Length: 146
Ligand code: ATP
Ligand code: GLN
Image (cartoon, rainbow, N blue to C red; front, side, top):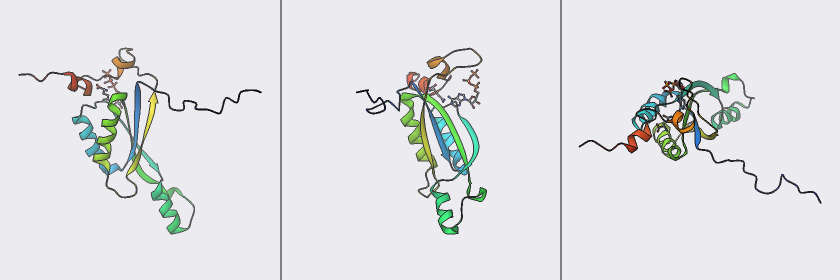
């Protein structure tokens, strides 16, 4: 009898040293989120203007009784932040604290494992490339001066 390899517990979520925190948020909350991240030592962030629909779009659909059109797409901002695994929860908590209103449309956060980080200028990889001067790991390892 051949083994059926699709059964069992395949690792769909491989452990990684780095994760991309990908947050889809309300545009008007971005300045607040960015400055809070900066204060906690997050120095590398990429932001894009995007449009999408979630529960908010579904609500519009039910009310209007029509299919999605471009008009149902709501302007959002996507923030992408690659951090070491041990920094993920702190970043996620901070984003929630600064971006949440409690209303439908606050957004969603995806955690994406990242295989490697390469700094273009130096060719550095992994921890050396992910680490930022004056960043979160510098902050936590530095002994406060007398
Ligand atoms: P260098 O010391 O060569 O400047 P760096 O690590 O500071 O390297 P930049 O080249 O300044 O990186 O970064 C270019 C762009 O890459 C940034 O503007 C930002 O959009 C993005 N970026 C850098 N690091 C991260 C990160 N950890 N997560 C998400 N985006 C990042
Ligand atoms: N983990 C990096 C550090 O501690 C910061 C990563 C980032 O700013 N996205 O230096």
